[in-house]
Image 1: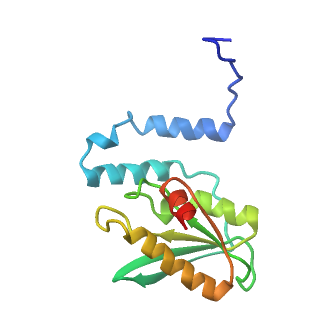
Image 2: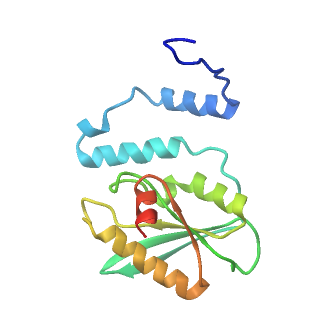
Length: 170
């Protein structure tokens, strides 16, 4: 016990050791909040893409878009199994602090969700700030959910960080 806290063994999976080594090799950590916004967003995307590992193959990946209030909202479908593509979809909302994150930065999570659940997974590229301030993201989500509910009747909603906030607010 160190400092009154128990010490746990810290054996890491070899894949995680490799991921951490790749992240360290990319260079020193930079405070994104001290960077100009466009540069900070690019850095976030690069960090997320470096963290993409063990991506299971998919039977199909398809991109669609939906127009909402003059904005194009990207949808990316991941299907792990062959078939007609029916079934209840899992709608996944990426994180990124409302101003970063995209379907391509979350593809590892979305692929694993599709494989583990057997459900079609739909990643939503909702509108980001500052280009599209509130309430653009919830408006995008409402339009996507209305469209999907009309087609499927029900769905599962999931997300992380800002995406989880959107999911919970729904």
